[in-house]
Every structure is written in C-alpha cells, then in structure tokens.
Length: 334
Image 1 (cartoon, rainbow, N blue to C red):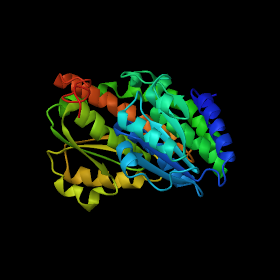
Image 2: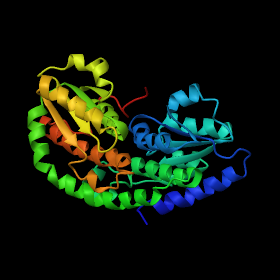
Image 3: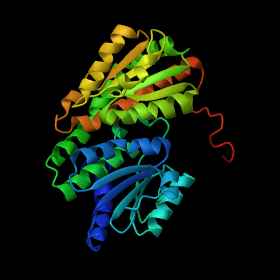
Image 4: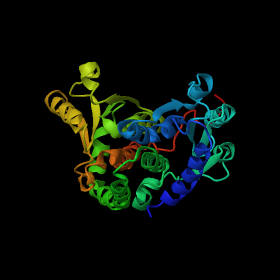
C-alpha cells in the first residue's frame, strides 16, 4: 500500500462510522489552517471541487474560521485542521468546530501536538526542513496526506472511478520526483546566480499548481528570503498583473500538466514576447506525463512544490540568506 495510505484509511473509516450515526451524514468538508499548511490543502480542495457532485467543499484561514465561522459547521460537517505542531489559531479552530458538533480531524507532524490532542481524530505526516531531498517522502507530507484523504472521500462518498489510478500515481511519484530532483540540479545553480539580486517577484501558475504559486510567494520568497513576491493565477494574469511586466521583472512560471495547461501556455507566449527575466518550471517535462491523464493534474503541486524549494534554496545559498532566517516569526508575541 502507498506510504501513509493505511493511516489515512484507518482514521477515515472511523470518521465514516461516526457520520453514519448522524442524520443526514456527511455534507460539508472544510479544510482549516494558516500559511503553508492552508496552502497544502489546496490540491485536496481543488480535487474535491472538481470531482464531487454532492459534497460541499471549503477552505478557511484558522483565525477567520474562529471569528467568522461558516454556518455549515455542525453535525454534518467534517473539519480538517492542519498544523505541523500547534499553531494557536488552528488549535482554536479545532475547538470551535468541536463546540459546534462537527467531526474534527487534525493533520499534524507529531502525535503529541495540541493539534492532535484537540481534534477528535488525527493523522500524522512526516515533517522536516530537508524533506524535499528524500524522494521517498514526496507524498508523506501535509499536502500528500490531505490529497489522500480527498481521493478517499471521493471513493467512499462519490463513487469516484479513478481511485486505483490515483493510488498508482502515488506509487510512481517518488521515482518521478527522484529523477526530476537530479535533473534540475545544474539548473538550480544557474537560477541562483541569475536571480540572486532580485527583490521583487511574480509567480504564476494554474490549477492544482496554484498551491506551489501561493507557497512560493508567501513562504519561500517572502517568509524565507524576505523579498516581495506576488502570487498570480495564470488565468488572472491578463486581467491586471501583466501590465507590470517588463524585461527586468523577475517572473517564475510554473506550468501544469492537465486541463489548465492552456492558461500557462498563454502566459508563456506573452512572457516570451514582452518579458525577458523569467524562468519556467514545467511539470510535464519533469515527468508528470507518466501518470494516467485522468488523475495527473491533481499531482502537479506534489512535484512542483519541492522542485521550487530546490531552486529557491539554491538562490538563498548564493545570497547567503538561509531559508531558516526570520525577522519576526517565533521571536515574540504578535
């Protein structure tokens, strides 16, 4: 069985038993988290919104969930809260969902975290700063765990017909990522030298890959490299943001495999005409075309997210600005 899938199946079967006792059963699935943890649920949310006909799907920042709780949170709601340790706002979100009668699942890196202890059920995933260097762990993280839950929900509640293809895709991902990781090593060195002095970035992408766009912008560039970065959906690029494009603006385009690739192709054509300081990372060329086309697009970010960390980490090393550096985070109350 796929790494981590047995844990997901065991816990989610217990969740299903709980909903079977409740009138109306499961109707709403809400993913709640902050920052990179919220971004990590985006592929799962995208998959469920794309494929589910009956389930209502949403995603909320933890603090917004606490202060502007959606009315759907109740006995027919599954609230999945993600925090590697115990982000205070996310723990409070779990408690809020519990009080309103929802079924809560905590996704966390540690069995003894407050996230795990506060939720009715919990699933642990692997977390370490250097996780992206080990291809065997490619889907044993928060993003991969949420995606496994989403495929399980589709199978159990929506009669999803491509579950087996999805499991095969999970099995292939370590090999695909391992080859991609080695393939881009020289490219990361050149990228680091070419872009080390840029202080303003745009990152573009579409579909599931928007998870990597968001994470690159807010986590890798702004949080870890202290440079301004704007996350832009490829389809929205032509509705405002492209007016800032010129030959000096640093732009990173993350191209998807799958149905939304047309949006990225269109952005690439424009960049080739009017930009000049842009870089393209293409999931299809990095091996995602090996997956069954019925499910491949849902794995875009599992591949691109760690690849972009490889690139940006290399840039950080040249800049002598480690990815672990923070000005404010974890240093005082805020």
